[in-house]
View 1: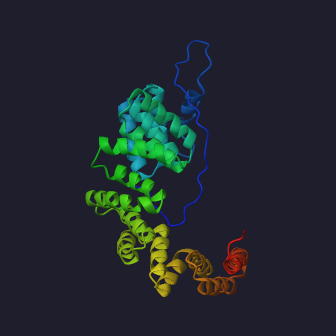
View 2: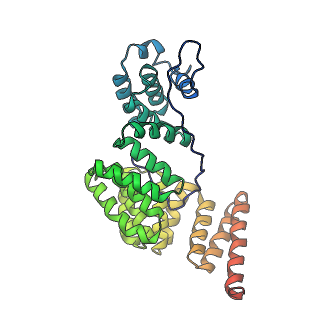
View 3: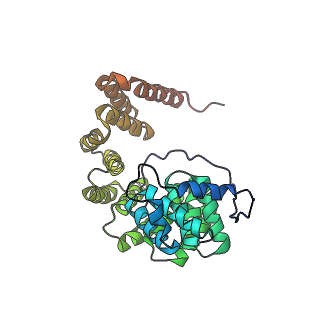
Length: 320
């Protein structure tokens, strides 16, 4: 599944690397901490009535892993994790289940656990596509871009027609800034040629074009993405941003308003104007946000204060 991109990037929490090896506990031996974790994950949730432990016990590791992969593609992370973990209980060294569980933990925000699994897989199989892709994502999220590129280019070389690998690699280029945006664009286009009906890739390419300042092209791809997923707030916000930067303020405001509310829309528009140095329009938008919703007062007021600081600094010039 392709990740989506938004124009506002959040900070990534950096977690320490902790390598945990699998070990088979002997008679009277203390269980490895990861085995204990797998055992907990392999216990069906009490709220889950359609899967029982006895049902899972009859399935071999490969079938459990195939079912886990199906649940993962469907977005059911709970059942995916249950099936992958049960497969690992049966065979602690079954790499497809390790990689599958690594993908689940990544999606659930457990970067350390995900990294441990992918590292184990890669130590045993240096050409494992899922592990290379997973470690590339994690390195990118940690801001370790050189390491991310190494993993992701290896994954792309192994499966050159994988839209997923192309997209992840392009996203890493995007994060490296202006000098790499032109390198990301052909990767997105190649991914889109492989999966032309994927709204996430349409969104990613539109995001890249917006970063390059090619707003009409960005609007075209983002509009297409939104037509495929009309309720996707992230695509709406990206399209609204591209419209605003293309001097289509009324259309941008309507989209922002439909996704985040009128006060937040005015605040976002003001922030975008502020980043572009269009200070009068930024101030007007922040004041409209304050007038529209008193409960939004703090955030818009903070942006107004920041705007005043920027103006003062511009008037005074650089300090010695």
